[in-house]
Image 1 (cartoon, rainbow, N blue to C red):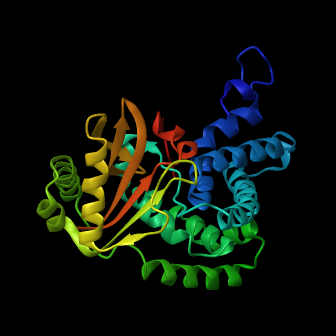
Image 2: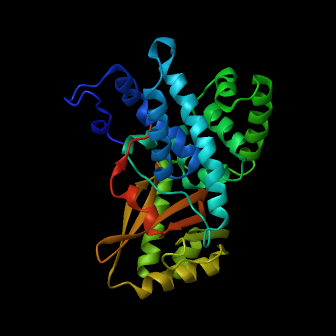
Length: 305
């Protein structure tokens, strides 16, 4: 939804409601995306939020930002429950929709961590309400009273949910902090090994229990189930790229706030490969091939807290 579609005057001027919405739009998109893992669904949530906001008496709204976050959260919660049913019939592993992010997203370490593919997959293991509470508290720093209004729970209940969600995420998030320079070095080494067919080079940077997940959505070919183990993952990567070597190119990109790789075939983006690194080794590879999930890697998305 662009600013142009929200121009009720028709002459390029924004009314006060539209101006307030536009001012907070990047924040609202980030909230919705972190809750849903889908940029397309986040955009739909923003459309619903705008429709509700356009009908509000602004004279009764003390804090537009808090009000808009509350509405966005409620809309995202409703859509999250629908997404849960949709994922049950999804063909193969489901991965979040990758975003080509602006370089400055990586500068906000907490934001970049919260939108990483690895973290979004951890958030998938929470209940919808736990996910909303965790995102609003841990990522956006809302107080318990604000969150309680957004999820329609008491502040006391929200505190308990936040504690439970925090413990759940802590047990599953990346185990060791990795400096950005080390991450880039690992990505470069990974790219070189795959491109040159260097099996030992790959084995040197893959954790013994590395997991490879491929998301084709039943539209294009992808691994139907997670592949676990350095030897298996390394051989599949080298064999897979070897089959299309003449038409393929791997290029680095900033995906969800972290270094990743874009695989192009005949110049067109075919696969986004996001990487999880723990203690200097690759522990997760997330290959998104579903064409319906690749539109947001064609242009940068500006995420904000």
